[in-house]
Length: 208
Image (cartoon, rainbow, N blue to C red; front, top):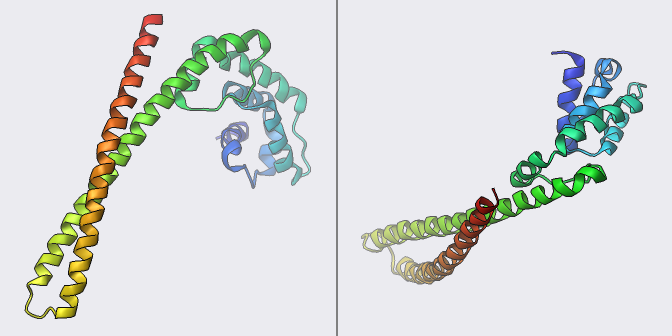
Protein backbone atom coordinates (compact mmCIF):
# COMPACT_ATOMS: atom_id res chain seq x y z
CA UNK A 1 0.00 0.00 0.00
CA UNK A 2 1.43 3.38 -0.98
CA UNK A 3 2.21 6.09 1.57
CA UNK A 4 -0.40 8.47 0.08
CA UNK A 5 -3.01 5.74 0.38
CA UNK A 6 -1.97 5.04 3.97
CA UNK A 7 -2.39 8.69 4.84
CA UNK A 8 -5.73 8.84 3.04
CA UNK A 9 -7.01 5.99 5.16
CA UNK A 10 -5.63 7.74 8.22
CA UNK A 11 -7.49 10.89 7.23
CA UNK A 12 -10.80 9.06 7.45
CA UNK A 13 -10.00 7.66 10.89
CA UNK A 14 -8.48 10.81 12.32
CA UNK A 15 -11.77 12.57 12.89
CA UNK A 16 -12.88 9.78 15.20
CA UNK A 17 -9.79 8.75 17.08
CA UNK A 18 -6.83 10.80 15.92
CA UNK A 19 -4.07 9.49 13.67
CA UNK A 20 -1.26 9.28 16.19
CA UNK A 21 2.06 7.77 15.17
CA UNK A 22 1.87 8.86 11.51
CA UNK A 23 5.16 7.85 9.93
CA UNK A 24 7.62 10.40 8.63
CA UNK A 25 7.50 8.77 5.20
CA UNK A 26 3.72 9.13 5.06
CA UNK A 27 3.97 12.80 5.99
CA UNK A 28 6.71 13.49 3.45
CA UNK A 29 5.31 11.59 0.47
CA UNK A 30 1.58 12.17 1.02
CA UNK A 31 -0.48 13.48 -1.87
CA UNK A 32 -2.14 16.25 0.10
CA UNK A 33 -4.49 17.12 -2.73
CA UNK A 34 -5.83 13.55 -2.58
CA UNK A 35 -6.10 13.69 1.20
CA UNK A 36 -8.06 16.92 0.91
CA UNK A 37 -10.27 15.45 -1.79
CA UNK A 38 -11.13 12.43 0.33
CA UNK A 39 -11.89 14.62 3.32
CA UNK A 40 -14.09 16.76 1.11
CA UNK A 41 -16.00 13.82 -0.38
CA UNK A 42 -16.42 12.48 3.15
CA UNK A 43 -17.99 15.74 4.32
CA UNK A 44 -15.16 16.49 6.74
CA UNK A 45 -14.21 20.08 7.48
CA UNK A 46 -11.24 21.71 5.81
CA UNK A 47 -10.09 22.41 9.37
CA UNK A 48 -9.14 18.74 9.56
CA UNK A 49 -5.77 19.75 8.05
CA UNK A 50 -4.88 20.87 11.57
CA UNK A 51 -4.91 17.26 12.73
CA UNK A 52 -2.42 16.27 10.04
CA UNK A 53 -0.29 19.31 10.79
CA UNK A 54 0.00 18.29 14.44
CA UNK A 55 0.79 14.68 13.59
CA UNK A 56 3.43 15.53 10.98
CA UNK A 57 4.99 18.24 13.13
CA UNK A 58 6.49 15.43 15.20
CA UNK A 59 8.64 14.64 12.14
CA UNK A 60 9.37 18.25 11.25
CA UNK A 61 7.07 18.05 8.22
CA UNK A 62 4.35 20.54 7.27
CA UNK A 63 1.40 19.44 5.08
CA UNK A 64 0.89 21.26 1.78
CA UNK A 65 -2.03 23.43 2.86
CA UNK A 66 -2.68 24.86 -0.61
CA UNK A 67 -2.85 21.42 -2.20
CA UNK A 68 -5.06 20.10 0.60
CA UNK A 69 -7.50 22.98 0.27
CA UNK A 70 -7.65 22.60 -3.50
CA UNK A 71 -8.42 18.90 -3.18
CA UNK A 72 -10.95 19.56 -0.44
CA UNK A 73 -12.76 22.12 -2.59
CA UNK A 74 -13.05 19.53 -5.36
CA UNK A 75 -14.21 16.87 -2.94
CA UNK A 76 -17.05 18.90 -1.48
CA UNK A 77 -18.45 19.39 -4.98
CA UNK A 78 -19.06 15.65 -5.01
CA UNK A 79 -20.22 15.43 -1.40
CA UNK A 80 -22.60 18.38 -1.69
CA UNK A 81 -24.59 17.01 -4.61
CA UNK A 82 -28.30 17.12 -3.92
CA UNK A 83 -28.52 13.40 -4.69
CA UNK A 84 -26.03 12.67 -1.91
CA UNK A 85 -27.75 14.75 0.75
CA UNK A 86 -30.48 12.21 1.53
CA UNK A 87 -27.99 9.34 1.85
CA UNK A 88 -25.79 11.35 4.23
CA UNK A 89 -28.74 12.30 6.41
CA UNK A 90 -30.18 8.79 6.39
CA UNK A 91 -26.82 7.38 7.50
CA UNK A 92 -27.03 9.50 10.65
CA UNK A 93 -23.84 11.38 9.80
CA UNK A 94 -23.52 14.94 11.09
CA UNK A 95 -23.29 17.70 8.51
CA UNK A 96 -20.18 19.76 9.21
CA UNK A 97 -21.13 22.83 7.20
CA UNK A 98 -18.74 22.14 4.33
CA UNK A 99 -21.00 22.93 1.37
CA UNK A 100 -20.60 26.19 -0.55
CA UNK A 101 -23.57 28.53 -0.53
CA UNK A 102 -24.68 27.68 -4.07
CA UNK A 103 -25.02 23.97 -3.19
CA UNK A 104 -25.93 24.04 0.48
CA UNK A 105 -29.64 24.80 0.17
CA UNK A 106 -30.51 21.86 -2.06
CA UNK A 107 -28.13 19.56 -0.19
CA UNK A 108 -29.59 20.44 3.21
CA UNK A 109 -33.17 19.95 2.02
CA UNK A 110 -32.36 16.36 1.09
CA UNK A 111 -30.09 15.88 4.09
CA UNK A 112 -32.85 16.94 6.49
CA UNK A 113 -35.29 14.54 4.83
CA UNK A 114 -32.85 11.67 5.20
CA UNK A 115 -32.00 12.69 8.74
CA UNK A 116 -35.67 12.69 9.72
CA UNK A 117 -36.09 9.19 8.32
CA UNK A 118 -33.01 8.08 10.27
CA UNK A 119 -34.44 9.54 13.49
CA UNK A 120 -37.81 7.84 13.03
CA UNK A 121 -36.20 4.49 12.25
CA UNK A 122 -33.87 4.86 15.23
CA UNK A 123 -36.80 5.66 17.51
CA UNK A 124 -38.59 2.48 16.45
CA UNK A 125 -35.45 0.38 16.88
CA UNK A 126 -34.93 1.86 20.34
CA UNK A 127 -38.43 0.93 21.47
CA UNK A 128 -38.04 -2.58 20.03
CA UNK A 129 -34.76 -2.95 21.90
CA UNK A 130 -36.31 -1.89 25.20
CA UNK A 131 -39.24 -4.26 24.74
CA UNK A 132 -36.87 -7.14 23.99
CA UNK A 133 -34.77 -6.23 27.03
CA UNK A 134 -37.81 -6.32 29.29
CA UNK A 135 -38.88 -9.70 27.96
CA UNK A 136 -35.38 -11.05 28.59
CA UNK A 137 -35.54 -9.71 32.14
CA UNK A 138 -38.86 -11.46 32.67
CA UNK A 139 -37.41 -14.72 31.42
CA UNK A 140 -34.60 -14.33 33.92
CA UNK A 141 -37.13 -13.81 36.69
CA UNK A 142 -39.03 -16.94 35.67
CA UNK A 143 -35.85 -18.97 35.76
CA UNK A 144 -34.90 -17.64 39.17
CA UNK A 145 -38.39 -18.33 40.56
CA UNK A 146 -38.19 -21.88 39.23
CA UNK A 147 -34.85 -22.32 40.96
CA UNK A 148 -36.22 -20.88 44.19
CA UNK A 149 -39.22 -23.23 44.08
CA UNK A 150 -36.94 -26.23 43.71
CA UNK A 151 -34.72 -25.10 46.56
CA UNK A 152 -37.69 -24.38 48.84
CA UNK A 153 -38.75 -28.02 48.83
CA UNK A 154 -35.26 -29.41 49.23
CA UNK A 155 -34.82 -31.34 52.48
CA UNK A 156 -31.62 -29.54 53.38
CA UNK A 157 -33.09 -26.04 53.06
CA UNK A 158 -33.34 -24.31 56.44
CA UNK A 159 -36.31 -22.35 57.72
CA UNK A 160 -34.30 -19.13 57.59
CA UNK A 161 -33.42 -19.79 53.96
CA UNK A 162 -37.06 -20.41 53.11
CA UNK A 163 -38.04 -17.09 54.71
CA UNK A 164 -35.40 -15.30 52.62
CA UNK A 165 -36.62 -17.06 49.48
CA UNK A 166 -40.20 -16.01 50.14
CA UNK A 167 -39.07 -12.41 50.41
CA UNK A 168 -36.98 -12.73 47.28
CA UNK A 169 -39.86 -14.31 45.39
CA UNK A 170 -42.14 -11.43 46.37
CA UNK A 171 -39.57 -8.91 45.15
CA UNK A 172 -39.21 -10.78 41.88
CA UNK A 173 -42.97 -10.90 41.46
CA UNK A 174 -43.24 -7.13 41.90
CA UNK A 175 -40.43 -6.56 39.44
CA UNK A 176 -42.09 -8.86 36.93
CA UNK A 177 -45.28 -6.85 37.23
CA UNK A 178 -43.40 -3.59 36.74
CA UNK A 179 -41.80 -4.98 33.62
CA UNK A 180 -45.20 -6.02 32.32
CA UNK A 181 -46.54 -2.50 32.84
CA UNK A 182 -43.51 -1.05 31.09
CA UNK A 183 -43.94 -3.44 28.17
CA UNK A 184 -47.56 -2.39 27.77
CA UNK A 185 -46.53 1.27 27.62
CA UNK A 186 -43.66 0.48 25.28
CA UNK A 187 -46.02 -1.40 22.97
CA UNK A 188 -48.17 1.72 22.80
CA UNK A 189 -45.07 3.82 22.14
CA UNK A 190 -44.04 1.39 19.43
CA UNK A 191 -47.39 1.68 17.68
CA UNK A 192 -47.00 5.46 17.58
CA UNK A 193 -43.38 5.25 16.41
CA UNK A 194 -44.30 2.81 13.66
CA UNK A 195 -47.21 5.00 12.58
CA UNK A 196 -44.97 8.07 12.35
CA UNK A 197 -42.39 6.13 10.37
CA UNK A 198 -44.92 4.73 7.91
CA UNK A 199 -46.51 8.13 7.44
CA UNK A 200 -43.15 9.73 6.75
CA UNK A 201 -42.16 7.02 4.31
CA UNK A 202 -45.44 7.63 2.54
CA UNK A 203 -44.68 11.33 2.37
CA UNK A 204 -41.27 10.61 0.87
CA UNK A 205 -42.74 8.21 -1.68
CA UNK A 206 -45.25 10.85 -2.74
CA UNK A 207 -42.46 13.30 -3.54
CA UNK A 208 -40.58 10.92 -5.85
